[in-house]
Length: 124
Image 1 (tube, rainbow, N blue to C red):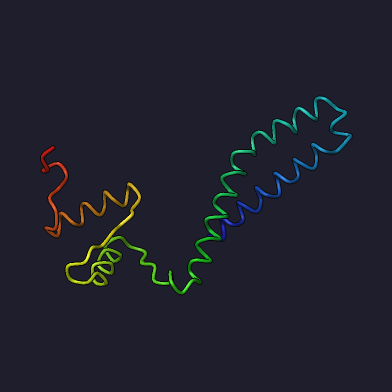
Image 2 (image 1 turned 30 degrees about the vertical axis):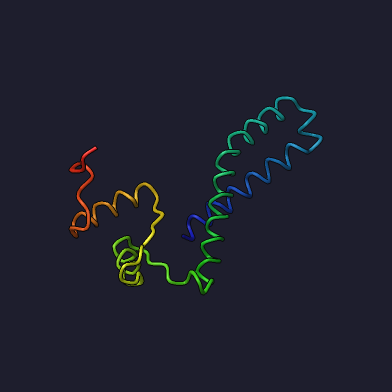
């Protein structure tokens, strides 16, 4: 994770540097230099935005790990399913909100355990 943090920090630094250069009157007065810096800012714009989103999610995850109510995060799908089933009272209902990829994995786990049929065997 440190390598990704370093990459995000480098991207932050490069983006801030390009913004600083763009506001420099000497760069602004040189049309060629201003165009180069403008292109560089444009190149960095999307990666910078993604890095900011990653940083926000990373910070949220770190905060969630410190939250007593969310402390019991189970990193693997099968373990999470087993834990959810163990916490569900008899006759109760376990509600899952998986991503699409996790949903496919859950479908496969449930079918392997005989709790549901594979989706291709279901009638329409």
